[in-house]
Length: 294
Image 1 (cartoon, one colour):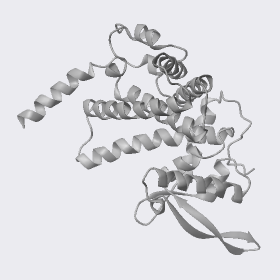
Image 2 (tube, rainbow, N blue to C red; image 1 turned 180 degrees about the vertical axis):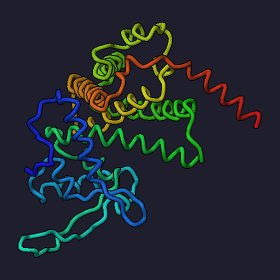
Image 3 (cartoon, helix red, strand yellow; image 1 turned 90 degrees about the horizontal axis):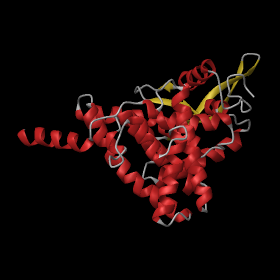
Image 4 (cartoon, rainbow, N blue to C red; image 1 turned 135 degrees about the vertical axis):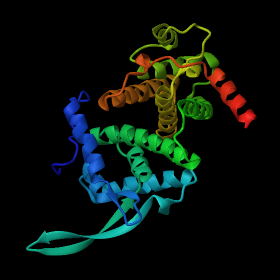
């Protein structure tokens, strides 16, 4: 395997210095075209994702293209054929086929890769988080100014409402049908993300009362982590055709745990240690009053 690729045999508890090196490898491999658009070459990603055979990696990319279509995106906007010259010795070169991928294309490719590979497991978390950050930046650019914390919270809270419905649908398809079973399913996700704490445990840790909704008192960073947990669990349940309550609970816990691990690896604050935010209902009322005055 090329020396710049991830070592699939590395233990999950990677040292901080190694994690920083992995992040640099991803970002250093990015290129920018003449229009200033960031992209990756598939053959570079092949090495980074730990795939030795090009034809095997192409199968992953084809699955990623299908995922792109399934969410209503144009494949050509995120995957475009390319050719480049590579040295073959004695100063000679030959032309090979390649593919240019956007950051979203990289994310879809990681999601369709073999998660048993350490490089893929890391990339699935990394690209998803970076993609979410880019979405926030895009929204800021659309509005012509940085989004305030209040606006970020409202935007993320609305997204979570939508994705929790999708998650409930995927969980029901997996066999989590009764309300009490779904409550257990949600507990497993929280425990994975919050280091073993269930909902009441998180409330006690944050000094919230039992009747206060957790999501209503999360800042944008914590909301983004929970949105990531919800969307990735839904995708995993559907993608892997998971069936059975126990299997669904385990999947939710594992996704939550991976999100937590990624937060730790990039030097973030654990979600249970993030400060309690103002009740989002008050925020919504305040912003509504401001808009009514305009």
